[in-house]
Structures are given as C-alpha cells and as structure tokens.
Amino acid sequence: MSDFSYHPAGDCVPDRPDLAAALDAVNRDLAATLPEAGPMRLMWTPSDDEDLPDQYHVALPDGRRHGDVQDPDAAGVAEAAQETVQAVLWQVWPVCREHHTGVHANAGPDEWAVWWCRAGAGHELCEVGELAQTLPGKQRRALRRKERRREA
Ligand SMILES: [Zn+2]
Image 1 (cartoon, rainbow, N blue to C red):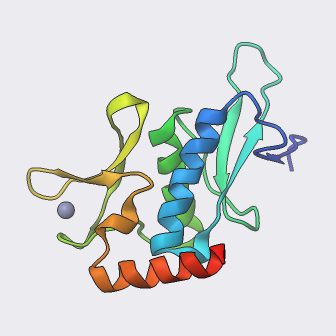
Image 2: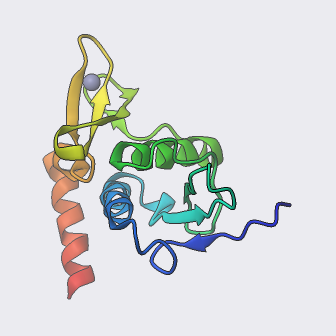
C-alpha cells in the first residue's frame, strides 16, 4: 500500500471544476447506457514533488479503479473512465451502434470531448455527455421516463 490518501472530488478538487464537469458528462452517458458502472467518482492524488503534477483517477462508486487520467482534460477523464470500466468490469464502453465496436474519447471543439468511432473513415458519435441521443427511440423514451420519475 502506498501512503497516498484518496479523496473523492467535491471535497478536495475545488480548483478543477473543469474535471468535475467532465466527469458529470461521463456520468450522464453511464446513466444512459451502463447504469451499473455509475456514478463514477473523481479521485485525486496530490503530488508531494513540486516537479510532478497531481494525479487524477476515475473510480467506480465503490472506489475500484484502473489507471490514471493521463491528460487532465475532458477527453482524459472520459478515457480514464473507459479504462476503469474495461479493466474492472470487463466491458467495452461505449459502443458505436452502427459498427458494433468500442469508441474512443477524443478532444473536441472548445476543449470539450467527443466519442469517436474509428471504424471506416472514422466518425463522431456525439459529444461526451450526449450518448442518450444516440439510443434508439424506444430506449431513449424509457430513459426519459426514468429521469422524470427521479425528478418527481
Ligand atoms: Zn461507428
């Protein structure tokens, strides 16, 4: 065991609201397509060496995680979430419905992130956080019903 301590975001990452927002987007996508994996938590390992950056991790609700956020930006957070889902839950997520293959987090416009499918010439699936829009109508309606129940 290392003597690092891990803190969930919110308590201890007040200076990185961008990463918290990136995680919110990922959690919206998990709620839509892989609810058992979310909501995920952003964790933080402060660096005790001023030459090294702090490290961030994306963990399952129970704290299990794999790897680190390589680039502390929106795409990096989405990528780290994917890595945790893949390594801990053995799930490829998310999947392009058209090509039945796993997609990848890419940097999109305005420092936002997109899910990118590498099949064929490659295409953008959607912005991270908008995966619900790619579901077939029936699933999308069921999801909206569920959300309305949660709000009620
Ligand atoms: Zn595709």
